[in-house]
Length: 174
Image (tube, rainbow, N blue to C red; front, side, top):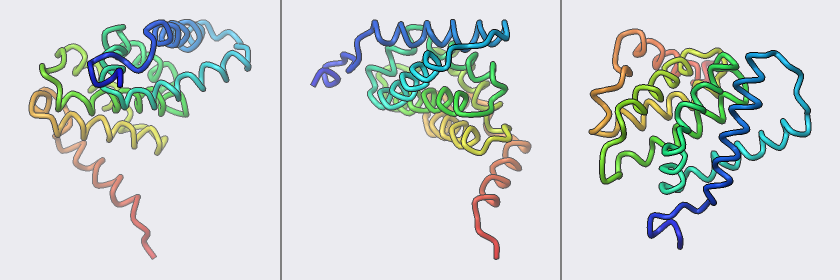
């Protein structure tokens, strides 16, 4: 019910804590190369996966963006070189966010489109198939949105080759 009147289904304090923990444990600690407590990491992984699911709600997705979530999630993906579960989840959250922009009352901020496009572009060229899939979800959401399709880098010959490679790789050749 709360989502129908533009309110997020999630308390803003939860969103702030998850994003702060991503910065502290995934971006800053990744740069410092410090060992991390496995229990804390598992809890953060679970909360990030929960956030991925929660961003199917437009108000929650908007709240994440308003809290600089695009920048944080893109940096967290970059900190693991767009490989592994962390990158998959972070790019997946961005894909869910972008999926709401087509029906939004106003177009998204160009800086957020550029930031997310850049992260998705790197994801599409990942060696990790699940990360590639999330990057493709972002590209699709941005290309299918009339307010963002012209400002994204997703139509060029290199990407056309990558799209064909992904499609060919998904077929079973016998």
